[in-house]
Length: 508
Image 1: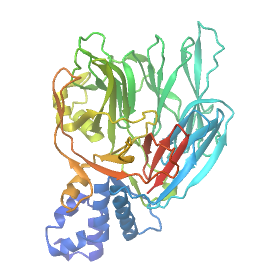
Image 2 (image 1 turned 90 degrees about the horizontal axis):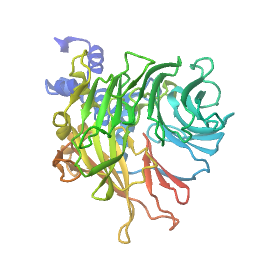
Image 3 (image 1 turned 45 degrees about the vertical axis):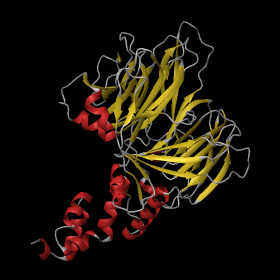
Image 4 (image 1 turned 120 degrees about the vertical axis):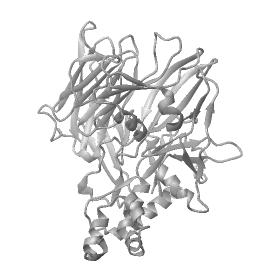
């Protein structure tokens, strides 16, 4: 009998159980219930419901971590931040928010970094600057790996008939020096047609993988390249006029968005999935070697898609630096993808957001045989119950860090009758189930079906549940300030007033 074992051993066994098993054991006997309602078991349940994972050993014991986690969850669920700080927006043209660090440039060769604080995860604010020996065109970073990826401003004085190399520098985030895990030169070079002067870049890091989408405003096709940045070797490179966006779905699967199909009478958005376990440096077209594709419903004949984007944060491989010894952090599995399409319909420009979890996409992928290739997953198989598709809220989409974990944050525009309102849509399904058992909950649950009658060729129904949390912003100390966007990280919200180049950091 299990109950005849020493109590210390029983506690050890319970500490190895997942939260679902703990809930089952709680119903077995009063003895098991007393253990399941102890701090260790309750902490495991709270982590699971919150979409969090436990941190490394530290001075914080289990009861401390449980108390901090409950306080943190209560603060987010009521949008009750503990600190507000105003900072100026610098004069540079590039910025980034990732891994709890906000970065912006003051000049083309100087970056400034701010480690955002957290009350409940005991993170102190820290600022530092890095002076560089190059002019930066764009950049991204991964604080957990001390990684700073810089795209050097290209030299435009080249022969118009030649190629030019885009130089990608792999540096330390804290010092600006060569990253210790980078290849010897710490520079990746990607050749582009020299005639494409105004290239735009989309950069993402996922563990040892670095992805960059090179988009040209002219006739050249977009190019997507994935490197193992620690070796400098190319894992995947793809080119096609249809490539619009990409994101890492997991460390194995890459998601590539396309919304332009010149051979079809009705345009259709697609989410192509590529398997990165078979690396190749050979360029291939979008249709050549995909594992599977998630099909959107066909657009109406009169609908003309303009842009297509995928946002998700953090990356599937993200984990905080263990040296930080944080009590807990966001689990990599609980991630929301927001896929936005802007289009022209009946002479007007509008946009729609699709909300879908990583688990929904991965469950369909993992159900396919490993030898399958180019398998199309029809909309009716994954979309109606696995997604929520709705018209986009009016938000300045230049500031694109509006999603973290399962949360999507937005800012309602004020009117002469009402002040600005902050709104979070949270797609954490376990948290919604717990809310349902708590009387007097503070969030509003949306479980009905969203119906879209126009834009698409047929009426579209989607019903992924979510909860809405709102809070009216306090009166503005300076009447002329008007926040036009909001960004989200693990412990903070950042309000943006781009007209007056002003930022407000809200800390949890």
